[in-house]
Length: 490
Image 1 (cartoon, rainbow, N blue to C red):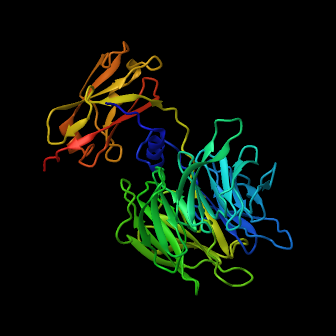
Image 2 (tube, rainbow, N blue to C red):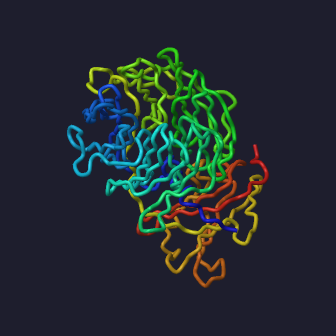
Image 3 (cartoon, rainbow, N blue to C red):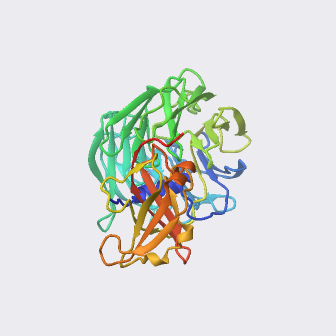
């Protein structure tokens, strides 16, 4: 039995650093923070915390709107900022200093524009209104125009997008989270409904990096996990503090950071829960709680605002630091201890009542990967692997009319659970037609004892991944599911 590893799994492994397919050079991480008092955005280097520049957002009377959420594109070329006036502004992050981008700017859209999210490939922006009965909108980034919209039948206050393009759209008014999809089968991409709805409202919503689970943050302080496939609830917990504001899921999907606020004063907390990647369950108790400043107050009234959808917490690229917009500063905390380590202060023009924040590392280099079909234990229907057994485990890479297995550099092959070690090499190989289709395949053997001893396979493994390169240095990748029986010898 063989099963092709999905593109979603491959991208999750690459993004999380569990699969290394190419070396990338280090570049500065770019941060963007919006400010509701001065109606502007500040750009900073999230590696050095050096301010790169500030850009004012034009005001319009009589109501100047909210300079709210922001997002940095994966390639760090542009930043996008909402203004609650049916517009998204485009900031040129590569200009020195940063400035308003040339071309169509702002981008007019069909809702107030409060919460913003960008697709992982950087092709689309998705925006929702934040509390009014207005549609979710889809923006084509290259043409800077709205190309589709979808009406939930009530307000949409938060959106996020999963690796497969599914969109989670939360409505506190309706008490629901909808799963939308981007249909790219026609001439123009279109927002459509998946037919799945979770009957929970939320102030903010997030999709896990592997796309399997969603996390909803509610003003009540409740944090809910749910499956994105069928939109059914899985688990619930509570943050420390009165009201849940926003959060972030770590890139490996194992931790959920949630910011909360005490509504009567300017104090708040970050509560961190562990997330089980297999079940979607949260840890019974928080793994970390630390105090932070509360949400910056509204400029005119002094009341604390828990903004719908706006991301008011960000992790730096290596996830060692937590950035919290607070009044007159961005406070920076150690992500493992909660200790305060630094701040970006109010000496800078556009940090006073900071709202949304976004940090983006350099996008990984584009790498061509040959997706190969791998069969563990060719001829077996169960792929059972006994960890107490000795001897060798057989695998095959199937050839095709488009890919000849003779291209594979056998010395480069590594075999193992991608969530454990880097894998082990093969001990024997031969070229033969394994599946009887008349095309030559690569039959390989690995030492099962070596896999167990080197922690390339354990009792929790459900997948074996095969990686390597061709003689032309092109990465190959494929895998198969396995069923582990027996426990490794002690």
